[in-house]
Amino acid sequence: MRKTGIVQDERYLDHKPGAFHPESPKRLEAIYAMLKGEDMTGLFERVPARPCDREDLLRVHSGDYVDRVAATAGKDHTSLDPDTATSAGSYEAALLAAGGLCEAVSGVISGGLDNAFALVRPPGHHSETGRAMGFCLFNNVAVGARYAQEIHGLQRILVVDWDLHHGNGTQHTFEADPSVLYFSTHQYPYYPGSGAHHQQGREGGTGYTVNVPLSTGHGDSDYMAIYERILKPVALEFGPELVLVSAGFDIHKNDPLGGMRVTPYGFAGLTRTILDIADACCQGRMVITLEGGYNIKGQAASVRAVIKEMAGVTETRAPSSESERDAVSVQPTVAKVHEVHGQFWTGLNP
Image 1 (tube, helix red, strand yellow):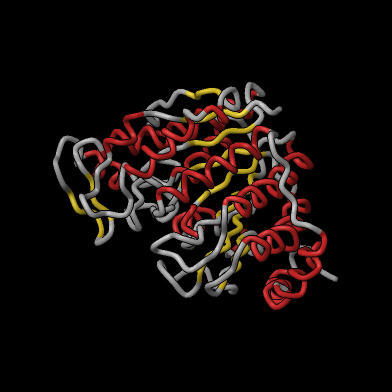
Image 2: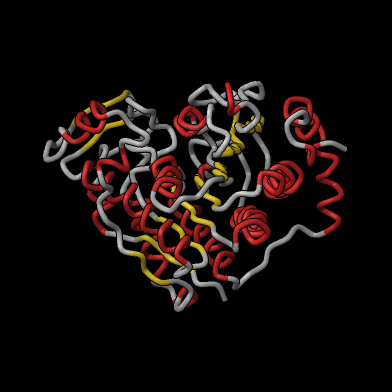
């Protein structure tokens, strides 16, 4: 059994972007109810959330933008973007989301936890330096990465993003920085329009942004093969000291906003590959943060599967017969990534 931490706080439910908005408090209500199940007893310990310090936010966001979000506190409704709105409790929830992730990062780096899952909202990976977008206020995973570097002195961090939508804000934060490797699989072309193969970073960070844009219809075995054949060799060569994951469950087969076919089994398999990377490179230090996911029942079941994998209750690997078949089915994807990134990562070369 591994020691797994869970960030959980009822104040995340106070972010209410609108009665018919897909990023609803019901998402976390269902997950929190699932955590009370008998099969989850003893699998995790609570990590207390705290408000993120302003200086931690300013490593990613502009002061003007932080002030703009702060000004929404106590107001019933403020529209920051066509898709992104706040309520009276949204600013506090956003501070607690970023701060809760930082607490999880500290717990894992200190050795008090083996790994952790920040079950927070609002999500973050679309948020830019000075702009809210795509349901996101503060870029939680980017804040957590910079916190790990500035406060804990880490040098190399891997950020993995399996959300249906490309994490434009995360990419832009780190695209010129070789100390953070950003890897993303996402439905393409789709919102927000970024994440093409040729977006591979810039200046000193060229090669440290690895985008794997995917057409619709990919399921468990496809995703698991892609993560084994593309992410793993690149990540092992990079050698991260911490692995952060932007976990969007909108690639679930029943998600109303998506076109993928991943099941709880597939999410567990992705988690296993990333745990293998963390075990090989950084004593298993991995922290996941919740991003999207809009089929409430499917998301709760998938989070359960991920936590069981993190805790060591399950060990999910694709059968060898599936692996052989999927090696063929994902070959065009692997070949394209090799074409773009083979010059940077020898592990991608045949």
